[in-house]
Amino acid sequence: MLAARLCTLAGLAGAAVPAAAQFTFVGDPGSNWNEPANWDPKGVPGRDGNRGANADVPGGPAIVDNGLELLLGSLRAGSLVVDHAVIEFLQSCKVSPLVLRGGTLRFGDDSLFVIGPSSEPSVMSEASLVDGYRTELLGELDIFDATLVGDTHNFGVLRISTDPPTQEPGVLELPQGSSLVNHGQLNLTGLFRLEGNGLLVNRGEMGISGEELTNRLIRTDFIQEAGEIRFGARQMTVMSGLVQWRGGELTVVRGTLFLNGESRFDGLECLEGNSLLLTASCQVLQPFEVSED
Image (cartoon, rainbow, N blue to C red; front, side, top):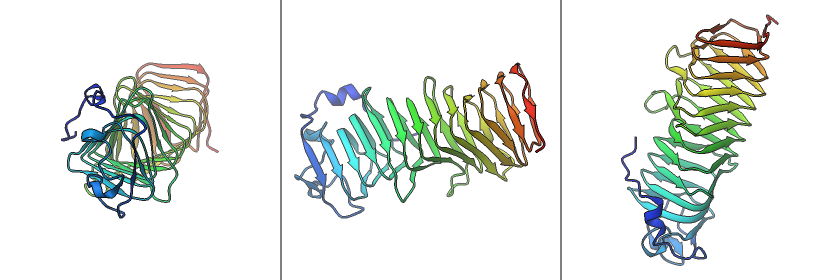
């Protein structure tokens, strides 16, 4: 997916400077990260002799682009744009908002990555968060093409939708061993695909909407633990992984939910329904109710 070359964490960490090294971004909004004069003290945190340093971007955005590869201890940024570049973190990262276009963020085992509240939504397009220990989404995030590795917890508003410039389906990949747990709002709109061998868990509000007739697939394993799923599209949406329903409500307004994998239900209520189609193995632990109310 990405043209940028990935460095190994171990290879970069060997040349790290002491974690106490601290740089503050003093450049104008939209200035380039790779310009030493944009930092106090002068230099470029994350590269050459400053690998492993901490960086603070109180305003921003700071632009990280052109294949730049950085190793940082920690980062706090009011706004950051990563365009076809690679950033690795040894400790933590908090960015609000983040625009990740064709970029990669890599994390060590003890890292915490946070997208905080912001008046502007963060964006991920052709992007990857890899080796993530825990990612917390507190603000608004739009995903058009991204891979999330590790444990991602959404406490804000996460949207996966058609990529506006290309009109291609929005794609979120959760590889094996990765999970996305929704505690807030997860909105799947337009054309979208959730792929991979990871796990999607809904504990909050999940909405599926749009008028498109194709490319609406959820291929990851799915657990509905609580909260509500609202399904309001003409298109039939397919869940083809293992579906486990442990509570909550399903509201079908104008569409059809098609379960094409193994399905297990422990209490399910389908409200205002058009149809709920079940195929493959289906285990009903408690009778589920279909209501026309």
